[in-house]
Length: 327
Image (cartoon, rainbow, N blue to C red; front, side, top):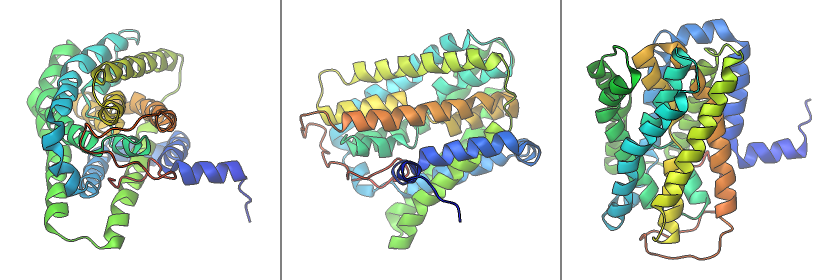
């Protein structure tokens, strides 16, 4: 029988998604050949479609109905996500030598908000309607705009139409299907629990496939620096977006803007440049989950509650990033 230290058990219970990502990274780095084969044979796309569908099923219809109250905040986040963040990612990527690693870093700014940001927003007592709206809206804009923007930034020939088609199949269609199923089909308690569990397993499997493409070298120091710069810049952007509005909406904008979806970025990188370009996204996934969970813990202790965002239900104290239920 293996004895697990108490601190490790608390980490697993409180941060299941982060724990799963760290474990999957270790597996991907050690069990390379079969995982690299899967990554090169549409494994990333298939897992991404499963992840998006499971996440969409977990979004409460009530949160979507409250979007009419929060539309200004959502539009501000979407505008920044398709203008400021791609430019920031391109600038940060220039510290990385030209090649697949630079291409992979560049795609981070074109990804929609991280699926886990919905949960971290709830943990921090933020506006669930805002985070759900940014998640859906940024996913749609990423599908529509990522290809042309990436073609402009890359400086070499890629096919925007191919990228749009790939993202439509593995992101837009599963998202629409999941929202439709949740709205039309009554879910049992077991099904509601299965959706976030499936999403978490999909995230872990994606990280393992991405980590299998990593070939650690001195170049990864530049990759880490570029990703840290992008993360800091996106957090600053989210903070600026939240200036002058209610606390709940400001928290949601900070987390959804600063947490970009590494899984969709990996799918975008693989579609545009091949599986090798997805390698930096595993590192970004770890960084962004650590940042999100840490920020949520700090934000939860901020004083002041308001209802300006139309959604001010506090998160449960023991909620973790693996819990995607809306308040």
